Length: 70
Image 1 (cartoon, one colour):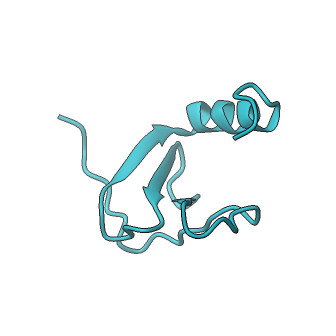
Image 2: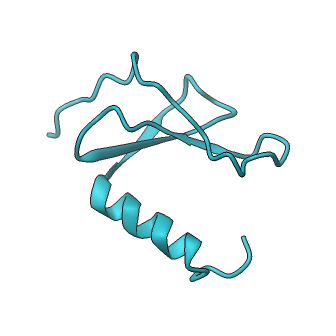
């Protein structure tokens, strides 16, 4: 079983492009090697934990237009 990550002290942020009425995700860079991601509408809810390299690849794909207009 994987170790639990305590996200209580995380400094969450969302993209400066997130001005769409609240349908946003938040991420934190406080955990080396991990990219915790949560729903901004449910800050006390669960977070998904991605390896940093996977998150960086996803962000690069979004920026590169690989998913179309989203």
